[in-house]
Amino acid sequence: MRLGRKNLLYSMVLAGVMMLFLVGYFICMLPSLYVEHVMEQNLKSVYEQHRAYMETGSYDGVRVKNATACFSMEIPMEGDCILVAGKAFSAEITLKDRRIAEILDSCREKLEAGGILGKEEAEREIELADEMEALGEVLREMISDTESLPVKIRLLSRSGIEEDFFHESMKVHTYPGDLVIMEFSVEDEHNRYANYIALEQTKDSIVFSFLPVVAPDVDEIRPVVLTSIPMLGAVIVLLVLLFSWMYSRGIVEPVLRLARHAEEMKHARNFQVAPLSEEWPDRKDEMRELADTLDDFYRQIRESWQELEEKNRELQEENRRQEIFLRASSHQLKTPIAAALLLVEGMINEIGRYRETKVYLPKVKEQLLSMRRMVEEILYLNHCAEDRKLQQIDVGGLLAQRLQSYQVELADKKISAAVSGPESFSLYTDEMMITQILDNLLSNAVKYTHRGGYIKTELIECNETGRPEMRIKNSGTPIEGDLLPHIFEPFVRGSQEGGSTLDSHGLGLYIASYYARKLGITLSVRNGEDYVMAVLVFAE
Picture (tube, rainbow, N blue to C red):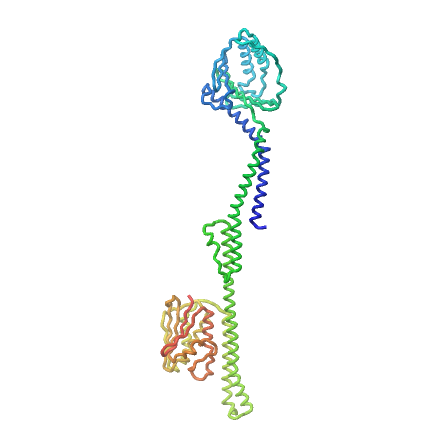
């Protein structure tokens, strides 16, 4: 399954789980939490209602829960006058009936004796049933006395409804000061009722605040929640799909782009693939880190591949060089071997002039020495290439030493030698290899310079390209034009190789160029009108 489909499937599963959780929450917990919240708000409302009346003595500007039924009643500690105030009215009631006044005095005494007003026993039950019963009798008697009323009232029936109510409960809430709020709850088959009575005693009076409310029921809220479930489910699904699409754009598409980028890397020729970070210059998240890591890994692979290719090219070149060298060496060794065998065989058989062994044995020795020098140079060539040690070398001083070793030849041919340049010409290179390069170049210069000629060596710390350079210039006949391109090949000898060909086997410039390549030195040979110049351009 592809990542996009997995993401959609996981999103749908998440939407289902969220739906189940929310439906369970709305059905089981939300209604009861709502009911509890409403009851707390009712308690807060009666408290604020009572506090506002105590501060202002009226309901002006007071926000109440039940504007038509809430009121406050203030009973003075003495007298027969009662103050009553509501949201829409305020009144002063004077008790004319002596029996009602006595009932009021009895209630005052029980309230004071019960300790509620003093809050010593706030939750203690106070029995006022007798007073309420007496008050009821008085009121019924007054109503039945139709002579004093403007209307005639005849009671047709009377039945008790106490059995219709159940789950009666009372809670007492105490507050700082002398304030006590009593919460009375009762239920019937259809509703739940709550009455809040706040009591507070002041210096001169007792104040009651009343708030009757119909409390919400849990079963009243559940149908509303159930009817909202389809809309809620549709919204959740739409939101999940929307955020899934946004997530796919932010996560899945970059992952797919990384996969395509890896595929491009896989099929790229010569590892030529632009870094993915160029497409995401402003991205700073984990996808950018992954892209950078992938590009870094690809760059390391490319560099390793390029190094391997370079090593392969060097190995192929070395194999080709060795193959050519061995072929040329075997060919070059055949001549002195054949000459030596011919001389030895002639002397053994005492043929003609070869009877003079004292004359021809030195010639055999010369052939054998020539072969030994050739073999030694071949072996030394491979040994130095494998055992390279780079260090700081005074090349100027080394050049002076090598020139000093040729003083006999220079004096014999009356050749002048001069070195110009800085006193110190130090380079980071291999001493054995640079010695072989200088030795072969100076040997060729001495060999091909005419009697009475010159050899000039110039040291340059920084040429026009910013690199150290050495020039070895010797007078003499320039190299033939058709021979110059092959001058660095093995066993190539010029026509003016001094004296007998036995003194040279054509490996000098080949060895010098081979070591120069190993050290990163550019070696070239140039012709002048009456001179030949070898130029060494060293690495920086």
